[in-house]
Length: 207
Image (cartoon, rainbow, N blue to C red; front, side, top):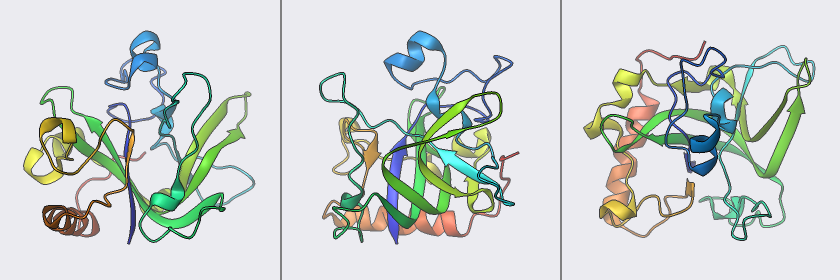
């Protein structure tokens, strides 16, 4: 299975925060300054390009090393995509979105896209009213899950490791983690997490 972990800002619903009640948190300097986040619609089903089916468009930041140029997403680092160095997109990826819990101070799974297309560079789509959404992952809404806030709070079940917290694997400084370390504990962690995702039958908060 091709898997990608993406760190994003914490939100309850990811439906845009137009009423100011779902302020994004822990999303970096831009989020702190603006109370806004490009990933605010990550779990809002959208229709575009004449499609009859709804899609979720996922944004995660690819950090810049010089503060100006946007880094490309190295899709060839996803396990199973090593030969895709010249490709713009890879398909059938399980994209797991993660965020820092605002109350319990650990990184948790907030939701996922099954069978997603993941892009090397940001894609843009313009909707009615002139709003432009940038995204670097896309999946059919029926293949996406947003966990309830209470479910995300179950640390033993959904915690995502960070090397800064003493783990030998997990997120480093980047907003993406490929889960490619050669580590037996990682293999056990992934086996457990993927089982939980594949067998999740609880509430899906996508509206």
